[in-house]
Image 1 (cartoon, one colour):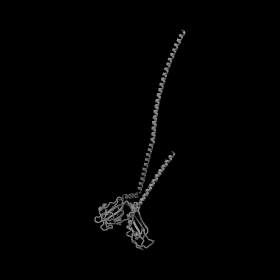
Image 2: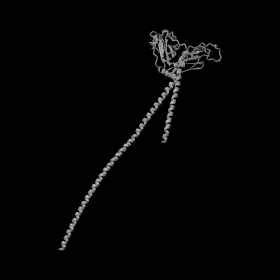
Image 3: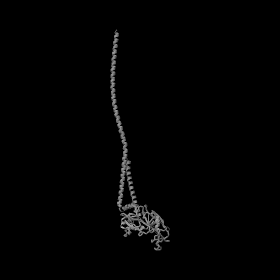
Image 4: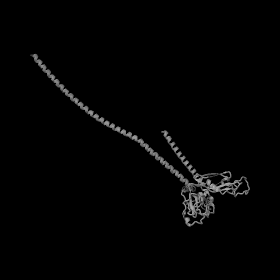
Length: 424
C-alpha cells in the first residue's frame, strides 16, 4: 500500500510535466513557424537585387514554394564605379555607359522559374564584349514568385483590369507582351498566321508595375502604343500578367517608400471606357486563376496577426487551453470506461461464484431435507419394528404358557395313571 501511495503522485507529476513540456514545445514551434512564415512573406513580396563583378559568381535564390522571376538585368560598366581596383579612381577615367543588350534574355533563359541559379560573370556569357579592357559587373533585379499566384491574359486592342478585394493590393511578379510558341488558342488571328518563333517583350513588367503596383484596382490598355511591339507587323499579340493580392499592411512594411511617396503612378486609361472599368474581365480575355486563394488567405491571416498580436496570442492560448481540456476529458472518459470494463470483468467471476455457492446451499438444503425425511421414516420404522417385537414376545409367552400347562396336564395324567397301577 505504501508503494501505491508513493507512485501515484509521481505518475501525476510526470504526466503534468510532460504536458507542460509538450505545450512549451508546441508554442516554440508555433513561434518559429510564424517567424519562418514572416521571412517567407518578406521574400515573396519585396524585390531583390544581386550583383557581381567579372570573374565572380552571381547567385539568385528564392525560398521554398517560390521561383525566380527576372525583372531586369544589366551587364556593363554603368555609371556607378562598383568594381574598382583603385580605392580612389578618377570618376570619369573610362567610359561607363556601355552595356550588353543580351543580358536580360540570357538571365531569362538561365534563371527564370528556378529556385536557385548561379552564373559565372564573364563577357563570354553575353556574347561580344561591350567594353573591352573595362571592368564590368552584372546587376539583376528579381522577385520570388510564389507557386500559388494569379494569371490574367488580355488580347491586343482590349483593356486589362486587375483588382483585389480590400484591404489587399496588387503585387506584380511578371508581365510579357507578345506571342509565344504553342499558344495558338490564345487570342487567335483569322487574318495572319502566328509566327514560327517567339516574339516577347519582357520589359512590359515595368509599365504594368508602374500602373498597378500597390493598388487595389488598375486598368492598362493593351496596344503597341503602350508597349513596344516585339513581333512582325500584323501579328496579334496579348499581354500576360502574373500577380497576387497581398495585404496592404504587409506591403507597407516591406516597401514603405511606395506609400510615403506623394506622387502616384499614372494609369494608362486612354482606351479604358467606363464599361471596361465596371467589367473586370473583358470579352475574349482569360479569367485569372483561383490558385492564389490559399496564398491570399495565408497572407491575410499573417496580416491580422501582425495588426492584432494581443488578440492572436489570446486566441492561441485559448485554443491550447481548449485542446488540453478536450484531451483531459477524453483521457478521463477512457479511464472511466476502462475502469467499468475491469469492474464488469471482476464482478462476473464473483457472481459466478455466488451462483455456485447458492446452488451448493440449495443442494445442502435439499440434502438436509432428505436427511430429515430419512430420519423420520427410520424412527417410524424402528417404532413399528419395536411394536412388532413386543407383539411377537407376548405371543411366544402365551405359547410357552400353553405348552407348560399341557405338560402339567400330561404329568398329572401320568401321575394319576401310576398311582392307579400301583394300587392294583
